[in-house]
Length: 164
Image (cartoon, rainbow, N blue to C red):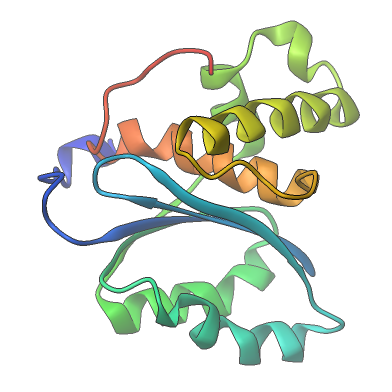
């Protein structure tokens, strides 16, 4: 289990970054205190553009301590390469794993239903962190925020809070 691999003091700098992999990528970052710093989505026209953009997307998130990925393994490669270069730990998760931990079953009966609930829950997390979204969150960004929320407990940065 990842929680046994690392614990953190909230006063230390560092980020946990969660990625909902795809050419439409969701990215969310949490600080060591477990606060959601941001959740956003980016669209890339090609794998080459994605590969080229990854170092810049992670440049302001130093020290990168954890990279959490969900989705297409082929699209994970540039993210994993950058994480290794930063000395960050990596955790891969399947959608059913984090959804089961954070949502009651009725909220993820289908992908479309799960995405709607993810948007609502991620908006609440951002509002709670004092960063309400100025535009409605895309489902990619919302799912990245929830992947990160799930991962906080897995890596020992926050206790498991149950359903968000």
